[in-house]
Length: 598
Ligand code: PMP
Image 1 (tube, rainbow, N blue to C red):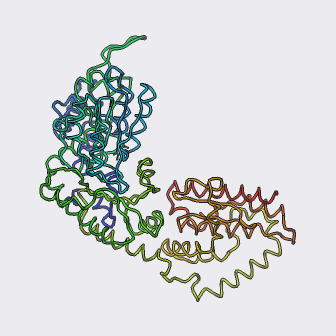
Image 2 (spheres, rainbow, N blue to C red):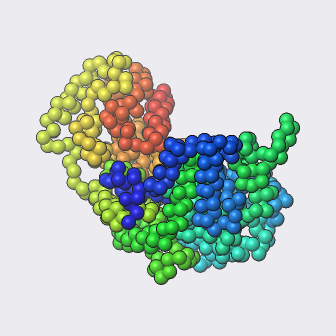
Image 3 (spheres, helix red, strand yellow):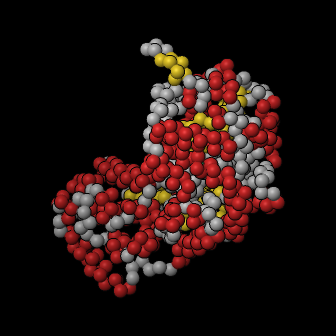
């Protein structure tokens, strides 16, 4: 219904985008407004009186009005523009003064985004407060027992309650209106992170009656780098600004200054004018379409949760389908236990990144990882989840294509998928190659320093990878190669052998005089098998000497990352995973050097 209003999908019809919780695609009215500003009224705001400067200021302040209307702020002056939710929460936490709060605890939910944890850690150190956590269930649910516990925790020794309106990691909608009503009775300052709510439901800050409400433009079809901090008037007056500089003052001397009244007090420096104007357009789009957006998303969300629940090897977190029916009865009703169209899950038999890597190749964008909610992942005792999140442009066909890709991927990952390690037609080639290697081994490879960093020999695994056409086939070969890895015994998977950064647990060590490794990710096991094959080849002594310094030093100086790049493997890994692979290579080299010295 809305998809054709998003130019991205007109340009990329093949793309299934299910990562709207990370960032949304931009609405055509947003792109138009940003473009018009750059083409027709490009000037700075609030400073000059020439025509285009007036136009720019008018557009900027109109965006403030539109944003105030979107969230039912009593006045536009209570809308502060900045770079996003992160800056908003940092502004609040750094600007609060002791006299503005009573009590000595900061209460946060276990599911908070890092942006709603870290600033509070700093504030608690600055003002001598402690942080207390509101728990959620081991299924990531926030239902009656957890809610009852939260109500108990809302006592007069709590200074600040900081919580999300909707969890970015699980999709849960929290009953912020009721919670703020009770918090207000205890004089608790309330900060609601509405980043994941703003594009999916009507937000009414007057009804919620929170002290602060924050969100980011890029999660509501507006540009990146722009966001909002709404605050109650008295608090905005007292809160100290974070960004000091031009435009936020009425008078400055070398030794002191007087600040503007809010909102300008918090908008030091030249603002993101085009971003703010784009955000105004997004606010108009959301306000006029929210009812149909919600109805559409509820149907798709149900389709997603039904499909996920049907599949046996999936473990779902958050409040998914149980309460959707409740929500269906009245789309405007946001009750305890509901969820937006964001589903988070893990697989019983497969590593998240293995599934994601294959799914990505099918033009499906989903997110895997900790979703900037590491403490929550620790509570749930998992490393991360796969998160599928919809937007108003998502269609039924997108969901079907996702499930089709998921089913194919899981089948491919299945051990018994039955591909052949080496195609029969290529068997002879590889035999010849292996003979060559064996011969080369006994001749001169160790003396040839020019080979460093180049794929000069074709070893069995690298042969298969080279022969495989396209990433899908290369990926299959990596999965098969994973079986060839010298597996590190379970009892040796200890901290001292751990390597960090591969987006999966990984250990490397010598066991029985053999370099071994283990990762939960099959694809990382395949990469390790490929690297260790090369290490073994380069480190084979020329003579029968058990500890051959020369071959060890060649193996230790070889550029394995360049080797992987030559095999065309590295472009398919995220920057994070590439760093992790580099860490693994460094660890392998270190183990090699130590082992062969002893
Ligand atoms: N809070 C929540 C719930 C979020 O989902 C995010 C973004 N993932 C943030 C805060 C931070 O938003 P931004 O990076 O746009 O500042």
